[in-house]
Image (tube, rainbow, N blue to C red; front, top):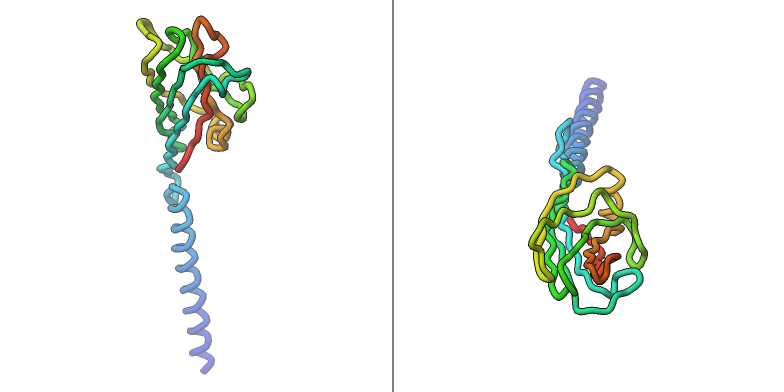
Length: 165
């Protein structure tokens, strides 16, 4: 009888160990990661609509813009495309900023390189590599983008960026 209860105890302990490994593996996969030293990361979709009303202080005008793209936590790469229309003239500046909605933010990295031949309606695409702190701000909704013109050098349109899984 003692042999049977020792055997049962070892069997239960082994079964619990195996189940723990499966549970841990399942949790890691839910986070978008693999067990071990490799990671596939999590891909977020970014989006945001910009208008003069969101500029701090607000700007009156018909200009608008959108941004869309993806961010991957494993590569720290943000890939984006912004499209604008109805500006008072060609964009003279554009950039990402950290800051909550309704607050002036601090520029993140360098201004976008818009090139030549841009007009009051157009598109720009690019890639940015983020730091851990920048990633945290992006995911928390504390990023925006702004596009300036000669008429509104501090920003003609501004839009908060949302990152969703």
